[in-house]
Structure formats: C-alpha cells, structure tokens
Image (cartoon, rainbow, N blue to C red):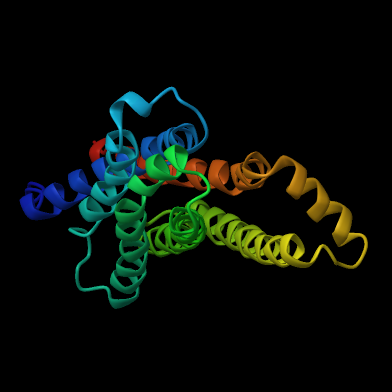
Length: 226
C-alpha cells in the first residue's frame, strides 16, 4: 500500500514553526545588541526608535509563528501566551531606550527602561518554558532530555539575576549590604549597565543553542525524512 500523502496543514504549521524558531534565534542577539547600543551610544540615534522596535518586533513575530503549531495543547498554548505578553511589553517599551539616551536624567524614562530590563529577563524565562514545552512534543528523546536540563539551568540563572538586580537596586539606595554580596554589588555599581548585560549572556547563549537544536531536529526528522 502506498504511503499516505502528508497533511498539508501540518506541513504548513511546521514550516511556520521553523520560521518562528529562526526569527527567535536571530532576534535574541540582535535585540540585545541594538537595544544596548540605542541606550548607551550614539551609533543608532539617527534612526530614532526604529532599530529597537524592529528587533523586538522580530521576536514577537517569531512567537506568533509558533502559535500555529499544536493549537489544542493547553500547556503549550499557556507557555506561548505568557512569552508573547512579555515580548509585546518589550516591543512597547523599547522606544524609551532612545528617549532615555537623549534625556538620561529624566525619572520617567529611567523607570521605563528599568521596567524593560525586568520584562526582558521575564521574557527569557518564559521563552525557556516555551522551548521546554516544544521539546516535550517532539519525538526526540535526546532533545527532551537536553531541554529539561538546560531550560531548568537557564531559569535558575535568570531568577538569580533578578534577585541580584533587586539587591543592586537596594544597594544603590542604601549603600549597605552584607559581605560578600556587598563586593559583588559594588562591582555592579561600578560597571553599571554592561555588568548586567554580561550576566545575561550565558542564559541567552544557552537559550539560542536550544532553539537552534530544536529547529535542526524538526528539519531532520520531518522535512529531511525519506
């Protein structure tokens, strides 16, 4: 008996899934670079708010592409909706990076940039949950094991970063903290923005690696099938 033809709707949803993963993979480093440059340097000021809107919009587009896959899976949909909420928040707050660069002493702009930084970390936590749920639905045991291990590690690192950021805010207000935390927070105070970006790089890199591995598993097992 000849093999049954592939489901066109399934193939379309898998195609959008791969496009979404590609958009997330490239959007993560681009968003980090562009947003930091918009906030701290003059290289992109000629383009006003467009660069951060474009890169955060790419992440939002990627998550929207993922939404066509397995619509009936409740846990998958819930994880995706939470990540979309933070992605949309990042998109809406990203123009304030430009305005904060222009008027760095304005308290409202400073508060919105701080909210954007918080939303970014929460977005990465949510994105790791999305990758975990996606890995659970794909027929690859090695991928499932890797996503369980590394998404748990990523979320722990990101939660630790949130705690450290909260302690840093308290430290900058009171200048009092127990040792050895005080020396770490003093280093953060001296390094400022760049120190927080550095601490974000490891979970960001591992998230990108998981996204790439997931995309390759889909391509190899579905589109590369004989």
